[in-house]
Length: 554
Ligand SMILES: Cc1cc2nc3c(=O)[nH]c(=O)nc-3n(C[C@H](O)[C@H](O)[C@H](O)COP(=O)(O)OP(=O)(O)OC[C@H]3O[C@@H](n4cnc5c(N)ncnc54)[C@H](O)[C@@H]3O)c2cc1C
Image (cartoon, rainbow, N blue to C red):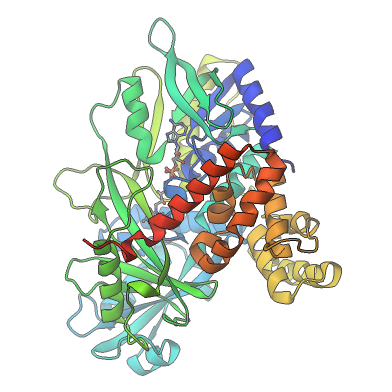
């Protein structure tokens, strides 16, 4: 389905001229989930995102749809049970962006947990999170653990627990939610920033003023209800409303590093204790020929737009990794191919350190009527959306002719998710891959990659395949063409970083094709020289962000 700058302009016109039921501020996973939930309950909903979808925290996570094992340490039983259920729902509705992954949890001599406690912990987790039988935990003694993952540190290893986590592509998960909401009739625009809130004479919120950062146009949108889902900027919007009293956000920064699999050759995902006695744990996760590892967790007080990656962050992760794995050679700065940094929009809790603050979500309802939602996780996005839309829809049912409807999203396939759920996914992958090979002359590996990335939308991507005319491989060119027509790619960075993840997991290739991506888009959108220069600068700045620590001489 078309989702392009054309539909964007049309949606912005409709938002500006109609009275919406709900306007959502923020196109991360939270705002996107709310938009889909509200629109499918029969409420006309609009969504504004000031940069690209998922450009905030929702493309900078550990990329796991977790059952929340970590919460068990904090005895957050209810959360574990809820996110476990949600994880199953996310998987069923979008198996193309969520992949079950066996995660090894090693335990060592002198560590907090031994075989017995780890086994019991994982059992409780399996039960609370209602993990399917085939994915329940098992325990391995040291020799078997090393057989399964030879690069685990051998000294002091007492064994491992193996359980299942789901790896996702956070930016694409968000996008598939956005695309589904668009398909269901929500009005959606990225690169439109909310600059002001509008009120009636009783100071009740009636809408927003915005700036379209693509055209420079400004305008207003009116809605019966406004929901602030601005992630790390939730308090900025609450300030605009004059209602930022009581609880506030506490932002904490998390950095991840990407290392080539040849240097960090893991075949299993590992969840390990850092060796620093700081009570923290890290993930090391193989993906697309790379291994990514993280995260740090430090308080962040500066602008959340582009949190930095310092030498200290990189050292912390590399030291932990070198200490916890017996690698062919110790990892150094030169081995880091890419990196990302994001901030968690957590809700402040007095006297608690960054890693102790609960990840619970919370709704704030201001006297003006503004709803704000903060905290939470990628994994729980659907439930968070359900909770807040329940409240807003009840208000609308009381105040207008709207008849209350419960959430419709439990069994709603996301865009690309029409693949027959868990049960049908393997057959779908086989059939669609075969189609790519036989009808479009792709290699099996390329076809399978596209099928896993685009799910049931893959045929539309196949149809964009043409012989190469520049540095873009036919597959790159097809993904870009599809991105421009059906995934609202506005800036080259949207494609290089969030639609294709190449800036994270295929850095050298991204570097080789970036100029031709900019050229292709310049021709498609008819950009002038100043725009081309600005787009190039934006890409260069993002490359710099991910590599600056290597030359930082402090
Ligand atoms: C390091 C790290 C690791 C994590 N790992 C995991 C994990 O593995 N699994 C998991 O489930 N969760 C994880 N999380 C948590 C998860 O990523 C976040 O809870 C989630 O992405 C927050 O989404 P959001 O939509 O609330 O915020 P965001 O994604 O930041 O979205 C808010 C959006 O609002 C937009 N916005 C702000 N102001 C305006 C305005 N004035 N006008 C228009 N738009 C505006 C922003 O541009 C932004 O895109 C992790 C978080 C971090 C930082």
